[in-house]
Length: 97
Image (tube, rainbow, N blue to C red):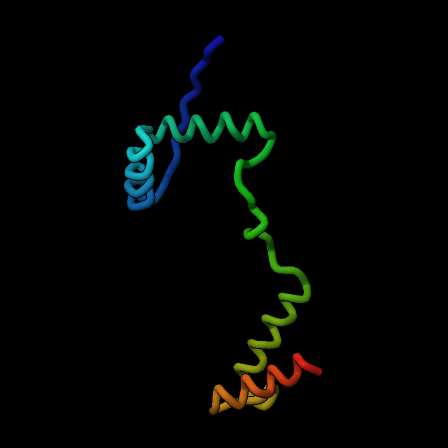
């Protein structure tokens, strides 16, 4: 039993045009691509691509970001290098310890 449901979405016009061009290379319309995405998502019971890269930073990462912000505000909280070779030498020596 075939049924049709209509959708309206708001999308950046540049993104839409770019995606239309990508779809055209495969002989598809945007509607075909959206339908394929929906059918695949339904069949898999989840997205057909990995969302791990979209995770929220963990507590350790957030703490590191905050530390960097503090170092930018007050450079005395971190070592400042004017020579990249010196910096790399010290970093590599710490890795070898």
